[in-house]
Image 1: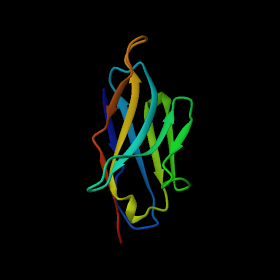
Image 2: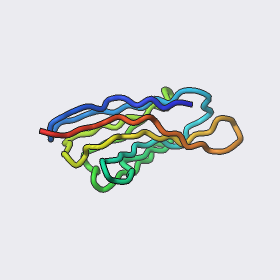
Image 3: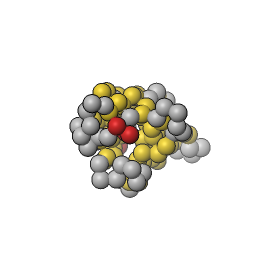
Length: 120
């Protein structure tokens, strides 16, 4: 199983970016997908998650600015980031909790990370 993230880059404060992350490989179902971020010198933190049913959860710092969505048919999760701030600068990692068969454990997979830099 691989998670391929894309969409990071350098933007100015107030601008927008859209991250994408596609899961591929031997997947039976994906229970939840999400985005986490890690700024230099800080621990990785949750940004947003979304279940297969569409229930979402956001960090307080991004509520009202970021929107997480997913396309279950494409095993893809998106993060629309608006009104970006310098403190949003971080490496963003996608995450998936998934099963690989009709019975069996839930696996936790991470993408490779994509860098978002917000600077004037």
